[in-house]
Length: 196
Ligand code: GDP
Image (cartoon, rainbow, N blue to C red; front, side):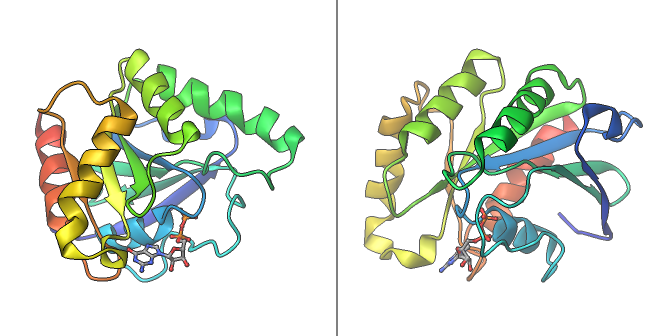
């Protein structure tokens, strides 16, 4: 994918604020600190477009990035982080849920999993929930540079088993925002989806 332009469009706090032009959207979900901002920046070949949190759980908005004036990448709030107040959780939970369940222009959800650790209960629940709602996510493992190459297959398989991924057809793409490993494969997969 050649990124000719990548523009931050809006941080939506209500669904009515989401772009209304009907262009396809690809949403990214993952636990706080999974490396979502880093991966988005790497995918877009920008240093600082998506904020690198440092402070997990801060982003409570749906952040839209308009790519090549043809589609959007959507950065959803990180889940499963205790420091987010109960009140905030109560507020963003339903909004994210509604977006994921009802958004017509949403063509693909990408779920990020930290490759170093087996998927957590939160990860499993998110995967199941998405699958149940017909939004089977593209699973992308992050921080590949933190494990030895010889362990790639083992960790990928562990993710597969822990998430209960039924079909061996479904890929788990291993990436590193530091080295760029796997970034091309993510784009190739998303580009195919955008063409459908
Ligand atoms: P977010 O909360 O999911 O947006 O996560 P961030 O992108 O802010 O990353 C959380 C932490 O993990 C930061 O300290 C990043 O520098 C680090 N990180 C993210 N991706 C990678 C990666 O591919 N490799 C390594 N080594 N560190 C990463």
